Image (cartoon, rainbow, N blue to C red):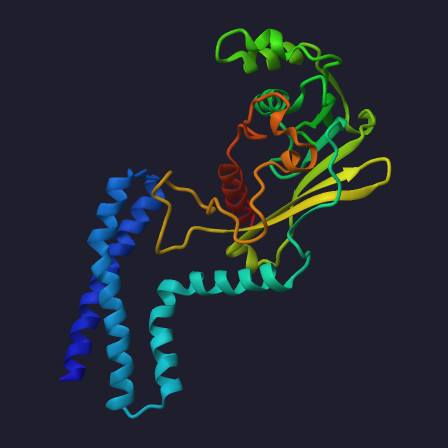
Length: 315
């Protein structure tokens, strides 16, 4: 009787899993964005599947022990092998995350050794996107270049060879704030008229350099985790006065992104403090201009996904 029940559950679950896998494939390929109510509907429809899966695992374990007379460890191993193809990425992601978050250095993942309210000049060296596009530079000017706390901004170009230099010697923000709601864009466009472009080797000296770059991981780990690090270097002493290391996971195969649609990387860090802008913590830059945009207008997910597909194509 127990054998019949197990076979019945097995056939039903395999069929439902095939349907769920087909749904997942559609969600991934079409990048469908579901509303909160639509996501709730999907969860309600397929939640019995996971309940049946749990019942099947327990029934199979009991069957192997009671009928086949297998040992507990052997029966458990067989059950895990049966479900592993569906959830292996969750298991490996958690194992790798435990190692890199709890064991691998640095500890802590985020640390701020010095705070400076008036840095005056900063060079942003972004090696992840890489560099700053024109729209990125507009947002950076609006975020930080207020002419009081920061008077010189240097941003590296996506080509890796040039830098863009912006100077504001005195605060002129207030005259723009009296205008329409897009005053920050008008301000940034005004500052960009004074843009100076030089070769990277000829960049002006600044008080601080902020370096952002991807952290290399072993090939097998990169299939499940992504890591990057931002460091704030005090140029006078060459010391790292702040850093933030973050590890991010991919969306699990069985649970794709339906909130935004088609995202590859889960947006929340697995470990380390979630620091949206390290500049806010080190320089208290949150209050400089009153504008709090991302450092980049471009989508990091799309850039990393395209880069990943390009590497796979090269192979």
